[in-house]
Image (cartoon, rainbow, N blue to C red; front, side):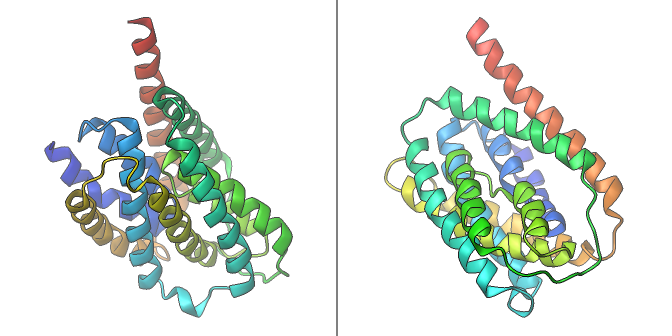
Length: 250
């Protein structure tokens, strides 16, 4: 295993703690390039790592104090169903399709991170539970299919669904990611080879990063962080897309 795998693992948790998102988008490329895993194995492994780290970060942020159970149940229920369907589809579609979709998703989220304006002001709004159910299913599908938690789509969705306070939306996102990723991971069990030892080791390292990110959530200016992370995601997306193009040309 590459030394970079262990050195960069804490950044998975750091991004989850800061933004309630980004874990899978870093984990899959990290496992693909630093550990040399095939894309399907990297996606299946990523789901378990992201689930564990999200749970650690949600606990650190005392999620039980702020979660809105009605929104959580509808969004999470739809996400679990979508995650299982997405993982089932992911077991049989061609690996290059997953890699291409992942590269496109990285570029789209990089653009979103560059332009979105997040708020620190809390304004409570009624739960739009039907919309939450459908949105959860769509994001769960992306989680199961691509091994990402969907947080960069989940946080703005939560903001639109009645949680306008960014730290509260991040906390909800962490809990939901844990549900969605676990549902997808269960479907991949027995279908795709995975290493429990590697999952536990990376999850613990990333968990340390999530504790740091949770502490920094209320202290650091997010605009410079958003721009830097946006650039990083864009570069990763171009690298994964470029590698796929070179494979076809070669």
